[in-house]
Amino acid sequence: MKLAFTRISAAVLLTLSSSPLLAADLLDIFHQAVENDPVILAAESLQQADAEIVPQSRSALLPSLTLTANTQTTDREFNGGASPSEERFNSNGYGAQLIQPLFRADRWFNLSAAKATKKQAAASYRDAQQELMLRVATAYFNVLRAEDNLTAAMAREKAFAQQLEQANERFRVGLIPATDVYEAQAGFDLAKVERISSLEARHNSVTTLKSLTNQHYKSADTLDKDMPIADPSPAALTDWIELALANNPQLLAAKHQLEATRQAMKAEKSGHLPTIDARVSYAHSEEGGTSFLGNESDTQVFALELSLPLFEGGNRNPKVREARFRHEKARHDYENSYRQTREQIQTQHRTVTTDVLRVKARQAALRSSEAALEATEGGYDVGTRNIVDVLQAQNNSFDARRNYSNAIYDYLINLLTLKRVAGNLSEEDLAAINQWLVAAPSVANSS
View 1 (cartoon, one colour):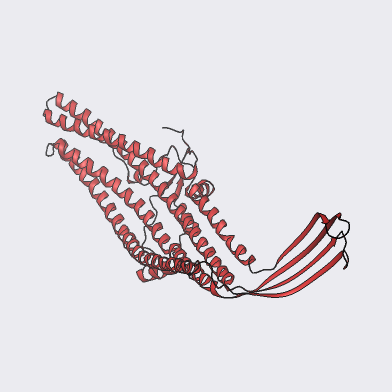
View 2: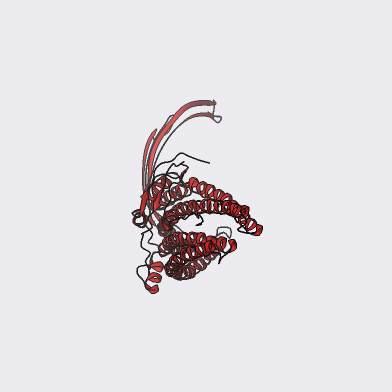
């Protein structure tokens, strides 16, 4: 008699029948994350705040205009002379002053530092955007991975339950010893444990995805099993290194930070230099009381003012040293980022290239395990194989399917990571993967 083993097609582990807590596709979830992820929202706010440093620094080089007005009451007593006297009168005035900095070296350097800081903020925000793409894709594929593993675990449990039932029937009629029943029971118990663990892993993966979007989902788009697995393009590692050194946002941010600290150091050093300002002022006053010169006056002043700092309590030199040390730190940070970028791009390139071979090998192992399972089942029917052989063949087949599915998800995540290190990960890359997602039917939320 032929045993009723349950089989799962390879497509099951590459596509989800349904995911209870996902909605729409990868791009939809990414767009929701852009609107709801607190990390990217914080990065956006920081980038906008840092961009305001430039107009603040530029304003220090522009004219400043001040209007003033005053009024006062004066009580005056005259005690000398033959007869003391007193008077009370009001005085009023108004004026305006315009100051234009002509030579302020420190302010020009501060403006250059602000521009570099703005570029650093823009690079950091681009890094946060690409990191969000990778986090969303990783979370999405981890949910698909967890759902695949749960589907496989449930199928394994069902198959082992049928195997246990078959073993009990054959034992009752004396065809197999009791040890075969015990082996089948052990296999079923282990499959049940795996199903419970897989269910927990799925819930955890969904929770991670929800933390990015703060959304509850009811359906998932599944990965098409015919999606091509190709080597990274361009294929040459040197091309990827060149891309990374030119575009990696973390490296660019470190480069702009180095420039910002260099300009800040120049600004502190220029504190020893003189400053020159042009000043134009006008004042009108009206005074009561007794005056031989009249009670109204108008004053106009046109001046060039030069100021040379000689001593500031010993504050200048420590500031210069502080700026120099901060510049040294930024230089070391840039060197560290440069080395890490080169190391990461080489590692990721090797990983993706290996992933391509790994997927092909996993696919071949899947075919071999399915053929071995079929042969073992046939041998069990004719008495040349025992229950242990069948259970082991089933385990090998399920593991091969799971490993094949995981290899594909690993390839996709590592490919996106490679692009992120190179600094050219974009929404177009998510859209390219999105084309290979198949819409799944909506299902009720389950927990």
